[in-house]
Image 1 (cartoon, helix red, strand yellow):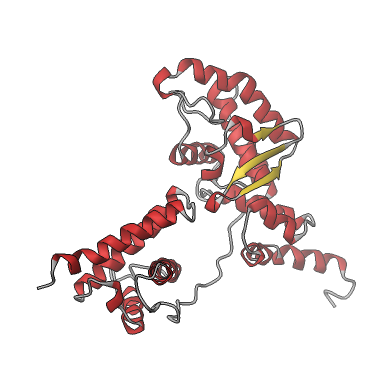
Image 2 (tube, one colour):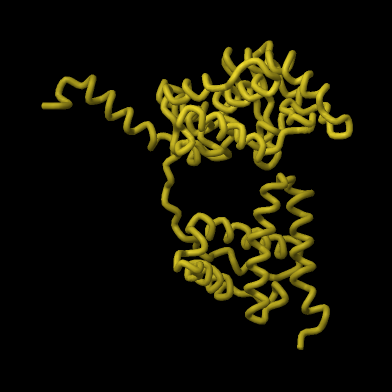
Length: 318
């Protein structure tokens, strides 16, 4: 039987790693939760194979774990984890073992050379410009929540924000005179993003008239004094609440099957590229650490490239 020290070693180091991710790397709560979920599964696998100390893990152990993830099926016989989920899980495992090495807790990193499964390049599904116009024109008028909802949709599309970034905006992050917003993205990285006139107008209208009404009608104990986007109780709007708003408006114009939490972000990037924006500019707008992440949008615009070529080249149909 393992001693208490042996049994607790894995738990102890996982807790230290979680603290390191939060304090030293400054990861956002959603990212921390994803690491935690991945490493809970990994720790369960290790314990199930009698491993309770990271120093006992070798490359074969990690490789077998990846194989186990690939082979595991749900009750319907489908793979429980997709290639992208397995690749993300391996990132979490590598982070943990690299932490153990860097802190002098183990001698070697057993995950360093383990290969992740190839992840098929997904093509983001953007709305057409006509569909975006339909969506932006579908908000009912005349109420504080309608003013808020219009500002939400306009800002998501204009700035290509993630929903988590949008609901995290504070009033000091808005500079409507210069038409920019300050955004804190993944890893708390700050970027300045321009927005167009419709988004500036919608935000200005909401901040000056709609938001004060939500503050007055909300519960004093729940009021979020700094948050841009508020719920009907006066507190900061959540990601789930914001997504519910986007989906409800999309349903009014028959786009509920085309909508997703990131669809306006994808649409912003695709339409910028369609109209000639430089890839590096789109990278900065979206807050991607690597331009290779942004390049996936060029796959979307290939169809437009073909259409323009066919229409313009004199021998395209010969």
